[in-house]
Image 1 (cartoon, rainbow, N blue to C red):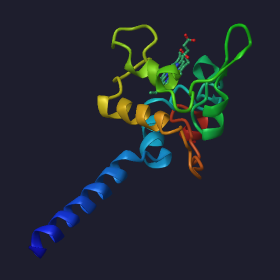
Image 2: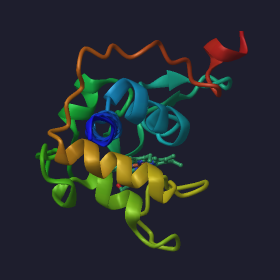
Image 3: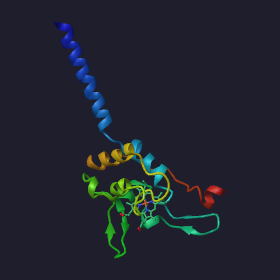
Image 4: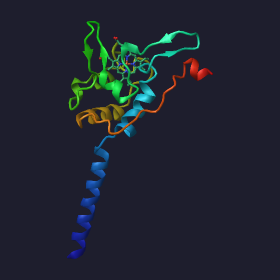
Length: 151
Ligand code: HEC
């Protein structure tokens, strides 16, 4: 009689562990790599390119650090627009622009491969969990098309 009970408790415990590990999204481990891979090329700090032109972030939106992500951008009426509403992915353009149809004008990333379903689901879950950045500090990003990168 003892053995099945022990087994059952063990597998329950294991299931609980697996669930919590998979369910808690970490900004640094899970979200930042998506930004770095698919967004930062257009949404980083202004930089000087190899021809001496200053390139500014697309749409005036920087996504390179938690602080900038939380600032959002200024719209045409010079009003601040937030791209993330903590707890509400459907109201967050940081998420909604990534799930548009591939041929939609507003899909993000604006060029290149769309995000995978696994990636957009991760973003959605992270926002629903409160869009917490933890103690993440963004590493330095030198734009590959910048003069600094060419030197
Ligand atoms: C190839 C360049 C490019 C890439 C890569 C890119 N964006 Fe953008 N993004 C733009 C441009 C251009 C705009 C401004 C669009 C406009 O003003 O109509 C923009 C605007 C935005 C906006 C504000 C627009 C709105 O509707 O609220 C969000 C949010 C955004 N991008 C998120 C992302 C995310 C998230 C990624 C990565 C998954 C990403 N972008 C990757 C070019 C890019």
